[in-house]
Length: 373
Image 1 (cartoon, rainbow, N blue to C red):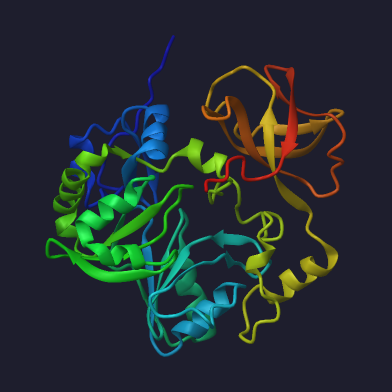
Image 2: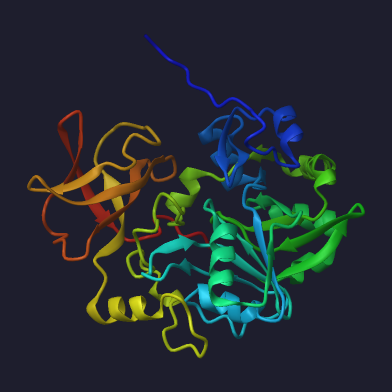
C-alpha cells in the first residue's frame, strides 16, 4: 500500500506575508520553520536548482524570523550570547554569528544586522531564539527590549540577481558590499535590502517591514524579473551542500559546539566582553573538540536527494559518525554529503554507511564541493 503524506494548513502554524503568492505561483511543498509555513520547492527540486545556478530565483524565507534587540544593554547582550566579537560591527553591517549555550552547544546561527547603536536584529534559523533570549536577559538583568518585529525576508538568489535588483532599486545597489544593508522602499513598500543569502550565488535578502504588503512585493519582483527568467523557488538543498553551507538542526544542534563544525574562527576567546559559553569553549579549545565536520562522497548510483540523511558512518562495524545532509549533485554527477565524525577517526580506514544492511563505501572530501567564482 502506498501512502501520500501531506502537511495540512491550520491556524497553529502561521502563514507568511507571501503565502498567497507562493500558492498562486505553484508551490508544491512546504515545511514548517519557526512555526511558519515555508516553501520547499515549486517545479521540482532539480528544476528549481537549475533556475538558481543559471538565472535567478525568488524565495519566501519569512520563516527566518527576526529577534529584535534594543535598549541600553543591547550590544552587551549580543556580546554575551555569542562568542564572536561584534564590537567592530558597524551600523548597516551584517555579521554571521553563532549563539551558544553555557556548555558551548549551538543554539542557532543567525545573521546579525546592526540597525543603530544598541539596536540589532538576529535573522534566525529554526529554533526558539526569542524565548532563549528572554530567559538570558531576565536571569542576568540586561536592560534590553526583546521582540519579534513585523519583518519578513524574501531572498533573491542567482547569477542574474544583481541585474534584477538594479532594475528594482537603481544603480546604488551595485555599491552595496557583501554583508551590508540599506533601508529603502520598493514602490513605497518599506524594506531593508542586504547583500546576503543562503546560496553560493549572487544574492540579496529583502526584508519586508510591512506584512500587509507581502503579496504586492512578491508580484512586483516577479514582474521585474521576468526578462531575466526569474523563477519562484526555495532554499535549495542541492546548491547549499555543493557549496558547503550548513543547516541548523541538520549539520549542527545543541549537541555540537562551533569547534565541532569547523567554525572556530567565529569564536573569539580573547574578546573584551564576557560571554555565556566562555569557560566551556576555552576548555574545549585547550583540550580539542570531539567531532569534526567533513565533506563526503557516497559511492552508489542512487540519484536520490535524501536517502542517506542521518545514516550512521561505520569503520569495522563501529559507529564513528553520521551523515547530516546528503544530495545528488547534477553538476558533479555524484552523491555528496556533509557529515560529523569522531575527531580521532582515521580517515585512511574504509568508512561506509549501510542501506538495507548493504555496505556503501564513502570517501571523505574537503568542503565546499563547488566554489563559485
